Image (cartoon, rainbow, N blue to C red; front, side, top):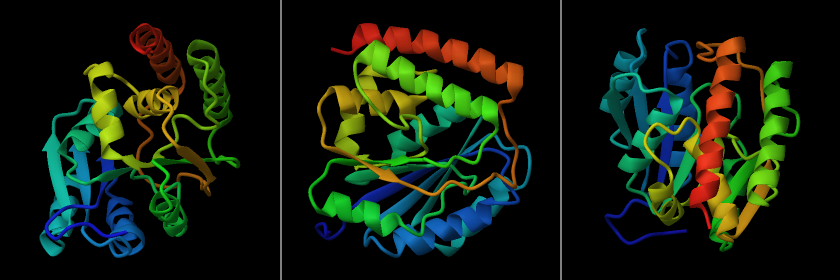
Length: 239
């Protein structure tokens, strides 16, 4: 797929928090498997108030590659960082990723081929997910809540592997208020409800072995309770 000269075809958007042990490899993986594969693409990384060396490492990567843009902000949480990155993205398409490298990018060309074939979005599906049991149960609960509240079926609605037209996010943004904990989840729900042509593609998922897990146990449960409240609000907004 090509675009007119001077335009950005694809923006990879990545929130980052305290990932000094993995961030250089994460950026290199995006460069190798995505940016080198898609002419005119960029990586937009939001450093969400990291307290380690993540910020300087990102600045070093950006200094070496003009395709890498780094935004530093005070800590707002994962959702806030995702929304900042999406707001800064200049591409016709956006690719939402996390920075922990749990989903390898070797198979990205498969997803891009689906876009080139005319589909409007590609969502990853982690069929064999390498996460603690509590997170697996919560994922199943989210899948059920999405079906019951919104009447749509998404196998892995909150997966950090979404490739889609930027215009879909532009349409969804007015329905996603600042402070939303899981804008990626809301984006998936809205896209499905609006009838966009979505392909669900199985992706590999690996155990996390670096970085800091920012949400644990009771905090995770409180996070989910707040997230459910926000989903109920979204239900009232979405038609």
